[in-house]
Amino acid sequence: MNINREEVLRYLGYKDQEIDKDLNNLIDDCIDEAKAMSKSLYTYKIFEIEPNESKKEINVLGTSLTLKGNDIYEHLKDAKKCAIMAATLGVVFDNKVRILERFNMTKALILDSCGTDCIEKVCDEAEEEIKKIAMKEGFITNYRYSPGYGDLSIDIQQNIINILNANKIIGLTTTESCILLPRKSVTAIIGFVDKNSEIVVKKGCEYCSKFHNCLYRRDGVSCGSYRTN
Image (cartoon, rainbow, N blue to C red):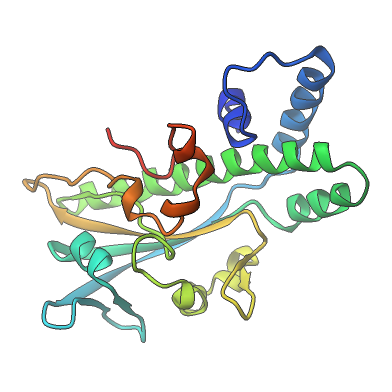
């Protein structure tokens, strides 16, 4: 798994600052450690869906899951199916960061940032598989949409874990407050739309639940989750 050094620096909040040799070496060490520890763990299923315009929600057929909110409705209203996916780097990575937090916070922060780039790569890998399935069925896909984006509540995390059997397959769990564990984990929903449709690109930062207190936006950049092109 390749880790983008520039992305790691961006997650750490560096923006054109000069970095000394010792810190450069530490970043390189963390990148190597992250590569060695990170596992590409993911699972997904594809479901028929039924939009409900009056309630602005999407029923995921064959499950107890209903996706509620105007934003997820807009994301899937023209889709015939959706893929629901879950991905994680695994508990080993999580444990390493937690241990480092006790005695070397700098290294913990750098390793955590490496993990952020790693989990994006794992999600990209899963999404590529999903795109190939969609193409075989005559569809194209829109972008990944995760609980916590816009008005899609994170309360559905446990339901997603259950319908994917993600606890057994990739070791994914959630806290009582719906935070995924291991911490470097993602769930997401991708729509299957007609191949002649115009794909809506990923919406901008204003649709993110962290819009008002985002450090990246304050500095005039994006976190990478919301691209405008």
